[in-house]
Image (cartoon, rainbow over all chains, first blue to last red; front, top):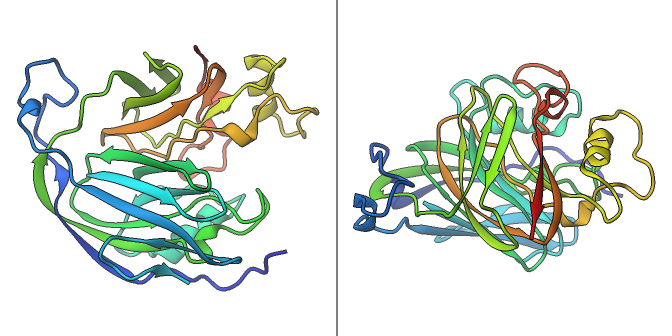
Length: 70
Length: 229
């Protein structure tokens, strides 16, 4: 049904999340009620949309970036 | 970072992250992922991700990502298990994670702890669960939640999964309602959202040891029965 075609990989994007990573050193993650986690900023949200431009092709769309995929 | 996958397609998709490794390429990784017989390469560093989301659905995961470059791709296939990877039809790319926010993982009332070779789910219930996931083992693991079909048992489900023979009909697993969890390497923590229905699940790891074509960890006992509701 679907002919295998050469690998088509997405373009390289640089996603500057301005705070994407969580605090690696915070030992209180998931810990008890009164922890510094209460005052930590909420993690930034990055939404990725899965698209189907045509019946046989697919793509991920990242925020602020052009569509990635064939 | 909270990563949310919104599925605007008519197909099922997931989103797997793998740490980019110098000297290797995304194309190389996808060749291994797409092959039934190729081992999971030891250089593969699973960064977590989002399990399969059906058409119109969405799911999210909050990851404790390290800075750096990651490859992302869908591990789902077109037209069923024998089809080509969606990743080679456009659903793959490379992304660089920059900056730190000081954010922490949100609290999660439920937990899922993976290791060699055990799966320990706690406090999961029907509906949407926020689950703190940790891999306390030494190798990557996944943990799909496979609904045991009505009238079947957990033992029948796991025996069918572990067998090389075709499953009896009707299959003891409701494959249309699987709640998947991306592969995670040891170390990084995450909070995943899992939407569970009342019933019995077989929670298993289907990955083999890295660098080998040995049977999956399921055959080494990495399976647990979870009754929801």
